[in-house]
Image 1 (tube, rainbow, N blue to C red):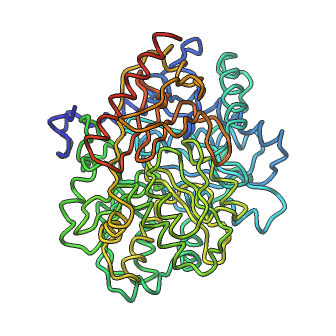
Image 2 (cartoon, rainbow, N blue to C red):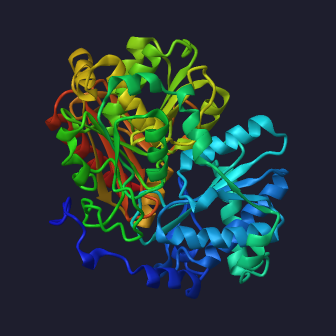
Image 3 (tube, rainbow, N blue to C red):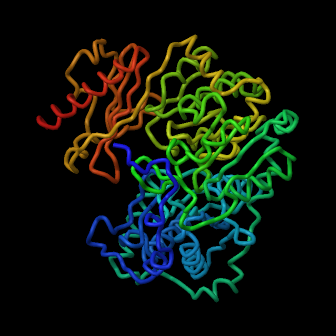
Amino acid sequence: MVNVLAGKVAPKSELIDVARLVGSYYELNPDSSKEAQRVSFGTSGHRGDALKRSFNEAHVMAITQAVCEFKKKMSYDGVIFVAKDTHALSTVAQMTIMRVCVANEVSVAISKDGNYIPTPLVSFAILEHNKKNVQKADGIVITPSHNPPSDGGFKYNPPNGGPADTDVTSFIEMRANEILKNNLKDVKIVSYEEALASNFLSEYDYITPYVEALGEILDMNSIQKSNLKIAADALGGTAIAVYEKIKSHYNLDMDVINPYVDYTFSFMTLDHDGKIRMDCSSPYSMASLLSLKDSYDLCVANDTDADRHGIVTPKGGLINPNHYLSVAIWYLFKYRENFTKDLKVGKTLVSSSMIEHVCKSLDREVYEVPVGFKWFVDGLYDGSLGFGGEESAGASFLRFDGIVWSSDKDGIIMALLAAEIMAVTGKDIADIYEDFEEEFGKSYYDRIDAPASLEQKKILKTLRAESIDIESLAGEKIQKVLSSAPGNDAEIGGLKIVTKNGWVAMRPSGTEDIYKIYAESFISSEHLSQIQKEAQAIMQELFKTL
């Protein structure tokens, strides 16, 4: 149900008390016996709220100490790049991280001039460093992504530049919780003043090298010559300074929208549930930028750490992430001369099947994986994946020469790619997608949530293909049931059922008492609804019997 305030500017009653939040970061201590207050690494690191005792200084001390120990264990003796986003807890968390890293004699590089730095720039910095140095660098990004202003987050990126895999995050999570349980006795820490004066601390310019290298992955000349009038909205996040640098360096006709940091994010319009959320794929959070769509040739946006993208055009409005992924893949594999036939296209198994249709028309192999960008890291890193993208508006791709650019999601290059596509083809993104619909049929895609207890979520996560004993779904014969992804055979933590003209995937939520139902039909919206309805009935029967 959509909140009555969705799409409207946040009232003052919804704004956070920054002083109280930051005070709680230092004053409140988590109870390690309570699951909700422990360290928990999901697909995007540990996230929490200081007021709820789930992201406090104790958590950051413990996680950082665990990372330092992991670095030593793996002999990663290079610098660790540390970047913060514009959430209120990120700055104080960075101060804590600096103190622990220095005490552990780990060289740490923070951003020059105190700049807020996007996730993709950290990935870029790690990869560029490791191309030139024997000592392997890694990174920490302090961000809860697009989550509300009261949240904090901690992500770790190993030397391959991408989000850490499960074996890494499991070690860090387990060790951090052990440290919490032992009342932080194993944490090495110095004062903030000692950290600032230490030779283990340095400043790094993340922005300039990234911006100057954009011509290696994007046709910046075509964008410049096109005279496209572009609006770039960082939604109060880390991309503000990056877009300002891009605008000046490449002399683009670009307006940077909301070019200031406000820890309350008071300029944001409320999301579907009435919360402030910097989600660049939500029409409610993007309402302000959508109101400008007829004043620009292209409007682009990013979430707070700029690893996700939002694309707005005069004709298409806010482009559905699945639609844009399809267009981006078509364009890259059609116009990049060095994107040879052996390069695969990475997609998550809950992304639109329109991608398969596009890839088949281009004679490209699809590499389908479970949800989570971590599954694309190795392929981007070794250059076997030309593109990796997920339905939640996160993607990255290779440089013109087929070499890795970032092995984490990069919302900035995806935003600028939209400008390149429009500049080179002369078409609106929505028009290109309409061509796909004419050729392959219209996609009806949606994601809904259904209630599920903790026990039911555990059951769903461990289901296997043989658990499904039915022959048809929404009037069509079931072709296959998947509990692991076709691309890498990794478990999906749920089920996907596929028919000739549709599919449905069910996965448990990691944070709420719900499971997610992703579904698509190439027949009609009514057929989509029937798929969703029957999927819920299937799950209810399974919950009864298992």
